[in-house]
Every structure is written in structure tokens, then in C-alpha cells.
Length: 165
Figure 1 (cartoon, rainbow, N blue to C red):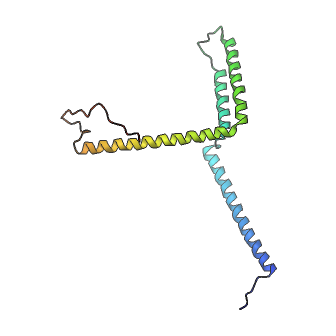
Figure 2 (cartoon, rainbow, N blue to C red; figure 1 turned 45 degrees about the vertical axis):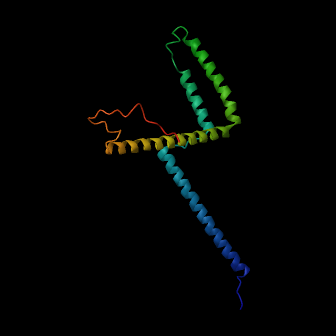
Figure 3 (tube, one colour; figure 1 turned 120 degrees about the horizontal axis):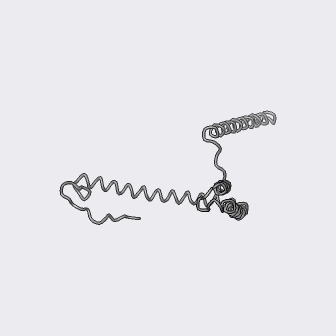
């Protein structure tokens, strides 16, 4: 039994063809991804930046709003002096926040992710409890149980025990 092995030329051509196919596939995927990102940018606007960038934007927006705020509490006479004090306080706050953001940008991403996880856990707990309440109330109403407040005037009691487990 003799096996034919491809010659070096044939093997090299096959490898080159596979590499070309892989490159073509990678190129097509990259083009599709770029087109999808452009479509989403057009439809939804630019994607949000990192949590640190968003915090910077928030601080800038609050600073701009405070700087342009005309407060009737400050009075007309103290207006320019009060505005100067507000600008100084805003600038001091920005100067305090900026180094923290610069040194620890990843911390804000982690805090944002942790906040999202806490929100998801809270929603899950609330939805589960809400499902229990509505299921129990519907069952009680159907069989004339405690949820049925018809002509009898029955009072279901001071409250319902909430199961937090």
C-alpha cells in the first residue's frame, strides 16, 4: 500500500488557499461589524463612554448648570459676588474629582457594573414577590377566600406576611 503525499508545492498552495479563505472571512466579518456599528451610531447616536468619561461629563454638566444659575436667594446685590463664589466652589470640586478619575478609571467601570448587578438582584426579588402576591390574591378571590371582600364585609386582617426568602 502506497500513500501519496502532497508535494511541497501542492501543500503550500493548499495552505495559502486556506489562509486566503480565512483572511477573506475575517475581512468580511470586520466589514459587517463596521457596517453594523455605523448603522447603530446613526440610529442611536454615539455609544456611551466608560464610566469615568460619563462621570466627567456629569461633573461638567452640573458645573455649567450651577455657574449659569441665577438664584433669587442670593439677592440682586450679592449676585456677581455670589456667582464668583459658586464658580470657585465648582472649580474646586472639579479639581478634586479629576485626579481621582485620572488615577482610577477602571474603578468607575467596576462600580457601574456592581450597581447594575445590585439593580438586577433587586428587580428579581421584587418581581418574584410581586408574582407571589398576585398569584395568591387571584386564588383567594376565585374561591371566596380572604381576598374576596364581597357583601360579607370580611376584613383580611392587619396585613399580609411578606416572605423575604
